[in-house]
Length: 175
Image 1 (tube, rainbow, N blue to C red):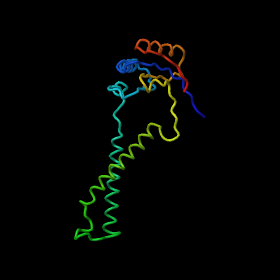
Image 2: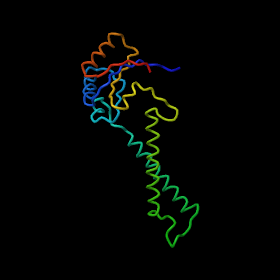
Image 3: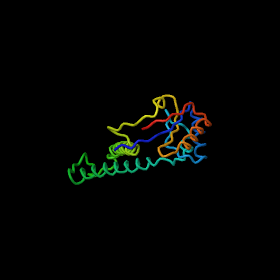
Image 4: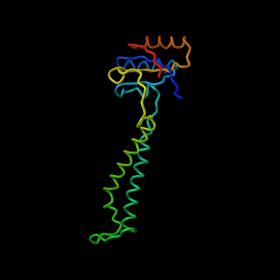
């Protein structure tokens, strides 16, 4: 059974006005549901109080798995499974393994980070995201609040907040 939310959102024409509105909302201890922008906005993450992404840690772990896989597999093949002497070189010629190890490190970290990113964001095949306003992907900036459990007084206070912070439009939508 799908759970619907009533969302009150304000559209802003400028990213700096949006960042100021987010800072004001945090100062007033308002519970921000989400902020939508058509492009990355400098200074928005600290204004929202978001911590740095830990995606780079996942990238390191996946890269390490790729490097261990490459070195381990090539070592196993060269030393024990199919030992062949190439021009007097030793069975375990580590320097010749470096290019393939590098490539598998990059491949594993890239594919792994994409999978982790899509999983964290709830994206992937068959997922359809509900859009508040189509102009958000073009030229508008959106600050959204979940008002499903709010009384009319609280909603009117949020509308006043949007007016005070310079929102060009204030809309409500059920998603």
